[in-house]
Length: 307
Length: 293
Image 1 (cartoon, one colour):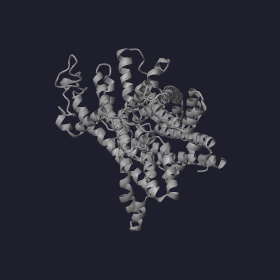
Image 2 (image 1 turned 90 degrees about the vertical axis):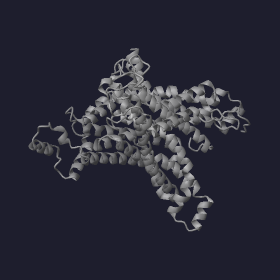
Image 3 (image 1 turned 180 degrees about the horizontal axis):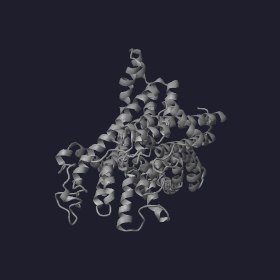
Image 4 (image 1 turned 60 degrees about the horizontal axis):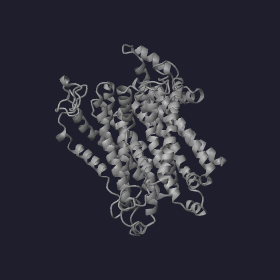
């Protein structure tokens, strides 16, 4: 078990390091020249030279790379934001809570709506709820998040004026963005818990429990769902990638002051240090979550450890 | 369990007398409409999608008070006909999505074939790599590429091309693993076929079914994803009539021109529903054991 954990941690660190390297070389070699971006149009070549030296851009590439990695690893320093003249990491971290709050609300909403509908759909197959669940899953997969968001703003914000269309502050501000962001996860959870439950209900241990005369509610919750939940957990954690894209979209539409909106603004004003920090931050979060899930799995299911 | 007649539904979907799943008529209709528009775009579009008439800006659709029958779905802020732009936008959407799937599908098929066929260490390494790859969200690659290369349709195709292969590789690998133990592969070996020949002309044709199902199922999702990227401004640039981009442009005028944000979304939903419903049906037909669920 220990060896397994160490190996996984090593892979996680390697992943982060590879992404860091890709980020450095892509931005340094890809023509995103910070000097050209920062200087006003009427700057002289001398100004450019001073700035180049200040950033150390005149040094050989491998020294620049070493400096970059050292700064990031030792000081968490990704450079200054061009727009705010503050360390890029600080700017990102200030915006994290807003994103996490919205993401959590959306995630919990998706769990609370998606799982029960999926389970009931499987138990009462072909019933009205099952039809509703399947329609919901299809809708969540087929409706683009950004269009749903814009339509919500059009109806509830512009036409009816029931809900605020931008910003954050009151609980009312959460309704539209959270609903919008949870639509895809709801579809995913409904679909998945339905098919996992259908499989579980067909199994022999459920048949056995019924033969023994276990009450139906216990058969469903204790026997079937407990086993189905293993599959469900994988996807529940796998949805984070989708949530990150969702938060970029939703924050852009609803002017939510989180990291998704920050990265879009930074991208369009060519504030590349902030974009770099965003990329590294997302990688770090995703890799860490995967690591935790992997270890949890190995703990629950010993077969995984020895693969 | 044995079912006779059509009373019982399969997976909840309505079936005909012989127990087959009924075709999704609505989905097929959407799909047919989409392909019709893609193929005959120039013939059916009433106006040039890029030429505006500044005297006719933001006209509402024809059934509203100020609307004209000339511009059925109204015009945008530059006086361009919305319907014509939507019709031409279908091509962009289709080409980008096919580009993405073609790109990562090819990589996925080749990697999957190699992984399944060679087995052993190669297989283990590739599958580990696929796990690792899947854990990275595509959006970070898109940000890197778009910063370096500028946002464009190619950037989107490249991003998904790089990020999308693991799923296909896994599924193709799974099929290959069981196919390579079959007699026809052994006989091909006896007949003196090389590894490449066995992989591409003996195993690959047997995976085609799976590939068709995968491509149809994923098409809908890819259309949504690519439109999302264009909506964010990370994909095609103005004056392109990409549906996501049209929606993004219309967003500033949302208070008085609702049609600019509504119809591009409707177009996307029609295309995506077409692919999703048809994809589910094709899966039922071609994959009765539900390996791809």
